[in-house]
Image (cartoon, rainbow, N blue to C red; front, side):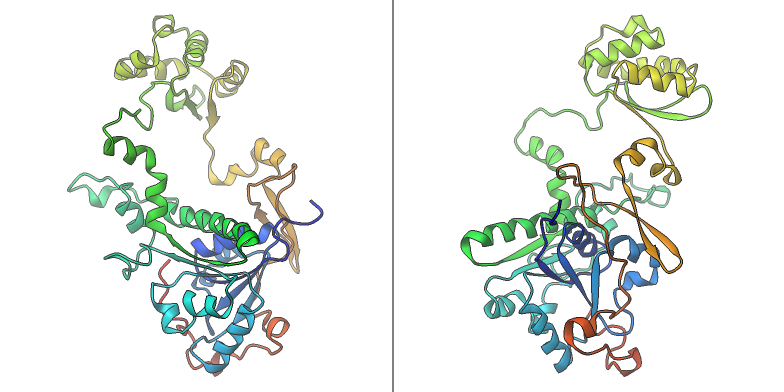
Length: 384
């Protein structure tokens, strides 16, 4: 791509920590000029964890503004005049109290796209409640723990509510910009972390609402699970109803007594079949079994630790790691996953220092933290 698809689009981001920064990263990698509007003194709270901040904030610029001050308010409006999108992640009502809500800004600039990302949405009984990912997953039905076993329950590793809302926000931005081409008008977008996860839960929620038959997820097929090989390595099989794969697996493992069973029969006899399957796989050296599965086109995958994921040959060939030069050497990044005509987005800018671009964008440098009237919480309480 000689020109990135979102080149010329300017996004002001007041959404902190995970959802807004991840959405902004996807858009910045595809060419958008994403400007972080950060609070004086501390900036985005994720700056406390340099690795987390760096993960989501490459390709962006940073401006420090105290939106409660007259100068900060005016400077923000100056940036809005040149922006296509404002993305914010405060609790509902905060931007309106600052006189910078969707109604005020779109009255000033009718073609502006205004995106709000919140835990529970802009209305409803939980609208004003703060909620991080665990609470969102629980409210969406993803945290199922027997009564009395709360202390032993593993907590989710991946913040699905954050990621889901980030991706819907990014999709919403490009959709609104596309619609603006014909209408000439912007739009006001309400992206809820809970709504986003409930949408992802559609195959669990829609069938029972309509008394429709559904399949079990995860599948009950005995060829769907995590298995141990002869040399102590783990491998996954993900046969989900494919009879041809099951027949090939039974041939490899010499289990002819189960080969002709249909998906339904296998699922009904899962508890009977699985011990035979595990015992047979336990005799297979990993590398040999890996190659046999590959040769017979059986759905499978290795079980990798985090330290091995990006060094896996598949990830290397796909170019999922990109590097930028730094004063101390290089910094590695995980690229965004969209490839267009074989090319992904471009990572060309290191994460910005706090307020690095005040002078460039506003014509004056940021004030030192000690001069700020609200050095740590001037933008009000943030929730995501």
